[in-house]
Length: 193
Image (cartoon, rainbow, N blue to C red; front, side, top):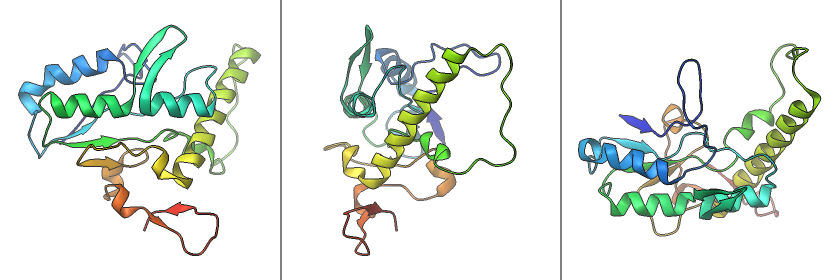
């Protein structure tokens, strides 16, 4: 079973639409701990689909993703801190599933399928520019994350699966051990076997 902390509103569900983990994310996991903690048949997607904040640079986004901090008046937990807290607070044996920075950006690196989507007349040019800027940060983070997984691997946290966007579909947990340096290039690019 996979449980995830989902903060994107969709349909009739209402959430705070947090782009990165906060103390509320930790509270969510603490409520579920008595039911699913230390159950190695339960995988925790610690924060589903992390995304950059408006105005983030790639560097800021990747730093907030891993180490957390304050941004535009809000406090975010980094994935490093969140994973450490979960391990200390009753999730010692659960596999933690961590989605790297830029996970949604991979889609933006592929050519679009079908005709381009039309935008409604009510969409403002400013909103479209902002969405485009956030998408560029996601894409750049995806490139950085796939080129150098060491940039986002959590330090000292055991049993973590790293994968872009729903690793159970891919079926292969991504860990530091199964990322290998490609000998075909001299650029030091990391690739998955």
